[in-house]
Length: 112
Image 1 (cartoon, helix red, strand yellow):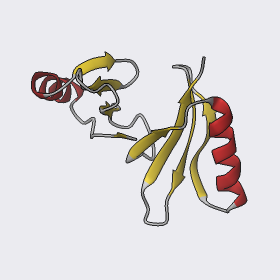
Image 2 (spheres, helix red, strand yellow; image 1 turned 120 degrees about the vertical axis):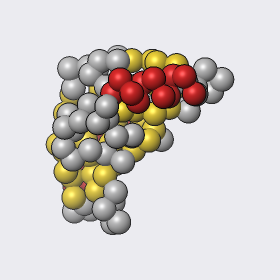
Image 3 (tube, rainbow, N blue to C red; image 1 turned 180 degrees about the vertical axis):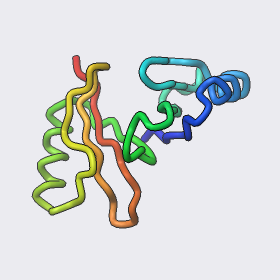
Protein backbone atom coordinates (compact mmCIF):
# COMPACT_ATOMS: atom_id res chain seq x y z
CA UNK A 1 0.00 0.00 0.00
CA UNK A 2 1.16 3.47 -0.86
CA UNK A 3 -0.33 6.47 0.98
CA UNK A 4 -1.17 9.70 -0.82
CA UNK A 5 -0.24 13.09 0.67
CA UNK A 6 -1.74 16.48 -0.20
CA UNK A 7 -0.06 18.09 -3.20
CA UNK A 8 -1.06 21.69 -2.55
CA UNK A 9 2.60 22.77 -2.64
CA UNK A 10 4.64 20.13 -4.49
CA UNK A 11 7.96 21.98 -4.08
CA UNK A 12 7.56 22.35 -0.31
CA UNK A 13 6.41 18.74 0.02
CA UNK A 14 9.38 17.52 -2.03
CA UNK A 15 11.81 19.49 0.12
CA UNK A 16 10.23 18.27 3.37
CA UNK A 17 10.20 14.59 2.48
CA UNK A 18 13.59 14.50 0.73
CA UNK A 19 15.36 16.42 3.50
CA UNK A 20 13.73 14.34 6.24
CA UNK A 21 13.15 10.85 5.01
CA UNK A 22 13.24 9.66 1.46
CA UNK A 23 14.52 9.92 -2.11
CA UNK A 24 12.64 10.90 -5.25
CA UNK A 25 11.65 7.96 -7.47
CA UNK A 26 9.54 9.87 -10.02
CA UNK A 27 8.44 13.45 -10.66
CA UNK A 28 6.07 13.38 -13.59
CA UNK A 29 3.13 13.53 -13.41
CA UNK A 30 3.22 12.88 -9.63
CA UNK A 31 5.95 13.14 -7.03
CA UNK A 32 6.90 9.62 -5.96
CA UNK A 33 9.10 9.14 -2.90
CA UNK A 34 10.62 6.04 -1.34
CA UNK A 35 12.81 5.18 1.62
CA UNK A 36 16.38 4.36 0.55
CA UNK A 37 16.54 1.70 3.27
CA UNK A 38 13.16 0.16 2.41
CA UNK A 39 12.01 0.94 -1.16
CA UNK A 40 8.59 -0.58 -0.42
CA UNK A 41 7.95 2.35 1.98
CA UNK A 42 6.59 4.97 -0.39
CA UNK A 43 4.56 8.18 -0.52
CA UNK A 44 2.79 9.56 -3.61
CA UNK A 45 2.03 13.28 -3.91
CA UNK A 46 -0.11 14.22 -6.93
CA UNK A 47 -0.43 17.89 -7.91
CA UNK A 48 -3.53 19.57 -6.54
CA UNK A 49 -6.54 18.82 -8.74
CA UNK A 50 -4.81 16.14 -10.81
CA UNK A 51 -6.96 13.31 -9.51
CA UNK A 52 -10.62 13.81 -8.76
CA UNK A 53 -11.44 12.25 -6.48
CA UNK A 54 -7.98 11.96 -4.92
CA UNK A 55 -7.32 8.49 -3.55
CA UNK A 56 -6.32 8.03 0.07
CA UNK A 57 -3.90 5.24 -0.84
CA UNK A 58 -2.93 2.92 -3.68
CA UNK A 59 -2.60 -0.84 -3.80
CA UNK A 60 -0.26 -2.25 -6.45
CA UNK A 61 -1.76 -5.66 -7.26
CA UNK A 62 1.17 -6.73 -9.42
CA UNK A 63 -0.02 -6.92 -13.01
CA UNK A 64 -2.71 -5.69 -15.38
CA UNK A 65 -4.66 -8.96 -15.22
CA UNK A 66 -4.98 -8.58 -11.44
CA UNK A 67 -6.30 -5.01 -11.91
CA UNK A 68 -8.85 -6.32 -14.41
CA UNK A 69 -9.90 -9.09 -12.00
CA UNK A 70 -10.24 -6.64 -9.09
CA UNK A 71 -12.28 -4.28 -11.26
CA UNK A 72 -14.57 -7.10 -12.41
CA UNK A 73 -15.08 -8.15 -8.78
CA UNK A 74 -15.84 -4.58 -7.69
CA UNK A 75 -18.43 -4.25 -10.48
CA UNK A 76 -19.90 -7.69 -9.71
CA UNK A 77 -20.32 -6.71 -6.07
CA UNK A 78 -21.90 -3.38 -6.97
CA UNK A 79 -19.16 -1.33 -5.34
CA UNK A 80 -18.83 2.36 -6.14
CA UNK A 81 -16.13 2.65 -8.82
CA UNK A 82 -15.29 6.37 -8.77
CA UNK A 83 -12.62 6.37 -11.52
CA UNK A 84 -12.96 3.99 -14.46
CA UNK A 85 -10.55 1.25 -15.47
CA UNK A 86 -7.88 3.18 -17.39
CA UNK A 87 -4.44 2.65 -18.93
CA UNK A 88 -2.63 5.87 -18.03
CA UNK A 89 -0.02 7.49 -20.30
CA UNK A 90 2.60 7.10 -17.55
CA UNK A 91 2.37 3.32 -17.66
CA UNK A 92 -0.14 2.10 -15.12
CA UNK A 93 -3.53 0.42 -15.41
CA UNK A 94 -5.82 1.47 -12.58
CA UNK A 95 -9.24 2.25 -11.24
CA UNK A 96 -10.48 3.87 -8.03
CA UNK A 97 -13.06 2.25 -5.80
CA UNK A 98 -14.72 3.60 -2.66
CA UNK A 99 -14.68 1.37 0.41
CA UNK A 100 -17.71 1.18 2.76
CA UNK A 101 -16.25 3.94 4.96
CA UNK A 102 -15.76 6.37 2.06
CA UNK A 103 -12.02 5.82 1.58
CA UNK A 104 -10.95 6.03 -2.08
CA UNK A 105 -8.55 3.23 -3.07
CA UNK A 106 -6.41 3.37 -6.22
CA UNK A 107 -6.09 -0.24 -7.45
CA UNK A 108 -3.17 -0.34 -9.89
CA UNK A 109 -0.38 -2.19 -11.63
CA UNK A 110 2.53 -0.98 -13.71
CA UNK A 111 2.32 -1.96 -17.37
CA UNK A 112 5.32 -3.74 -18.87
